[in-house]
Length: 453
Image 1 (cartoon, rainbow, N blue to C red):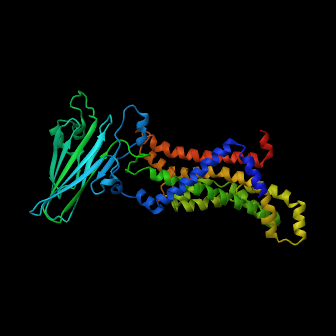
Image 2 (image 1 turned 180 degrees about the horizontal axis):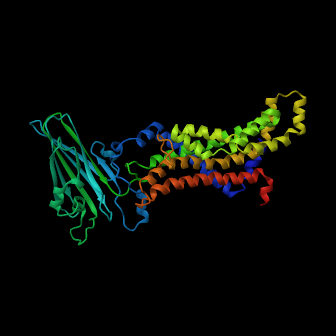
Image 3 (image 1 turned 135 degrees about the vertical axis):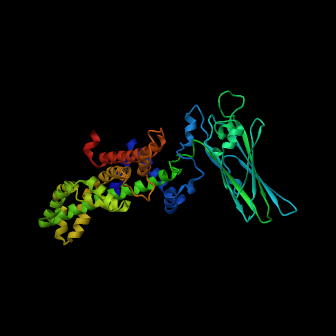
């Protein structure tokens, strides 16, 4: 414990070590927060779900924070639901019900939102949900602009169309005398060019019900060109889910692979050195054979012909690395330690071979093991991401590499959707940098010769 405390105090002398430990600690807290707020099963369900799970989000929308760095403000997506008016974050929703003496009723839903953007949204969609109605309810939609204009948009029967997309209403485009209905609704009539009129807009949806028990709710979804903290992909999926879950997956894979590889290699080298003879010869021959095996092609073959499970890839990674060239480095150190006086003393009082290996041999190498373990983590993190970019990642898990692979295969760079690649790439780089900086600092702490450099 004294040695550990001394090493920790020495480590705090290096600003890079402090910064790296802060980043790693923040990554660990973020991973715990992710696993609590978005359970793994829910994350997998959403990631592998259909567009019905993501209908509220636009396709390939950049993050909303990009408006802070742009001169031309792009519209941000939002959705308002009369069934949950208290959760409206893009505007306000009011719902009034008028019940008549003949048993019929009229539900009037008013959506109000402030539009302060320099471009038109992609679309506005109404999703109607009617309950306990056998007769066809009638829906009428009215649009109110900031300058006081009123547009009777559409009137339709709910059984014929429970989803109304403004962008597909050619009749409305002709009424508004616009190329696109969206432009006609938002365009400033005083401008020669089609530019949006800024201000507060209202949409009034009136649903006429013809049965006493019937009821209706309507959801308004505005698809802008921006959405959320991370944007969306080609399937409308919110990229925050894979960006958040990519952190615990990357840390788990990197730490387990590094820990499993280094500790197992250390124990195998200690066993071979202590027993010597055919045991040591066998370990050395396996190490030499393993050193010429193509590591990446073997993993690619496993992912292509057998399974792409991340746990199988992790096991194969550990198995192919425990007999790496590190065994020879540890063996050279153990050969010196084996001749130490305290080892002879342990043998003289009858200590077993297992006790000598675990209590006397391996602890002497731990100062060299810790920096190596830490510096191996980023390599394994990039390994998992690299396999995913090649299309060999776990199909069930939302990871950073899978996001980059989706962006690559769907032409993100050609379409200028740089956020789709840069966000997971930045997280990969920051994670790798944190462990690399800590590993370099640990090298200086445990290797006195490096302190003078």
